[in-house]
Image (tube, rainbow, N blue to C red; front, side, top):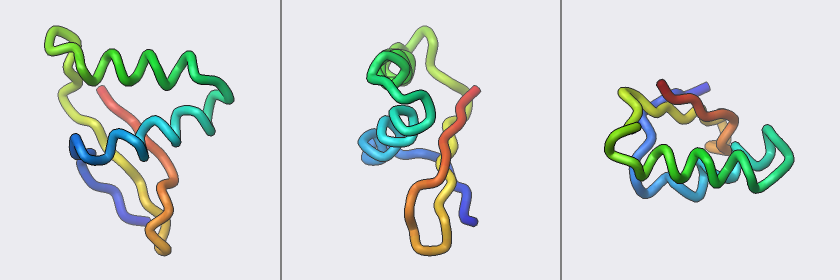
Length: 61
């Protein structure tokens, strides 16, 4: 597994993971809003990739 900081260009991957994890668009929209809100900007946003480069997870603080 490879874990690295999420980039702005990773937004589609981040939202895809959130949709898969929670089964709805609601949480993905919340994450999109939080990532775009400078007053709520996370300190770190990480993406996890499986060996075949498939996105496996996302987390942020």
